[in-house]
Image (cartoon, rainbow, N blue to C red; front, top):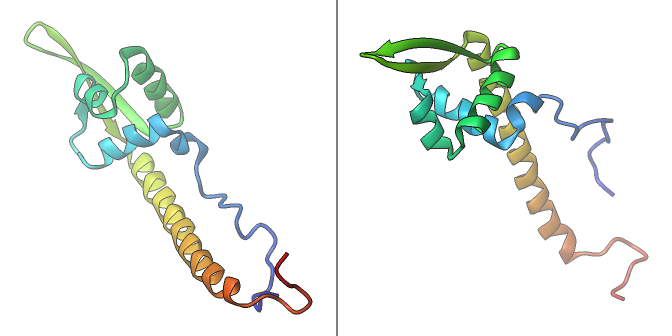
Length: 128
């Protein structure tokens, strides 16, 4: 068996923030994380391949969670919506990425262990 001690919940990854973990919201937050000045709604929509309604709904969830801030304004006579990460949103995103990095490290370690384990069967086992 494994030499490492089992730790309850070791692979629960509690830091995988459910608000950020959803695919569309992860794309939105990642897009905003790369642009400190924020993005216009139309640009964000194109980057994330979302409809107006889907993007609007996901932005509402993120805004309610304190992850994004939304500013309304005008460029000429055209209304514009600017979306930006909040300070808390940026911190939550970086914390989330750190947990994802631990998931990846665990997956790489597990893949290496599987290669080693397949070479030798535990005592008492034989091929079926």
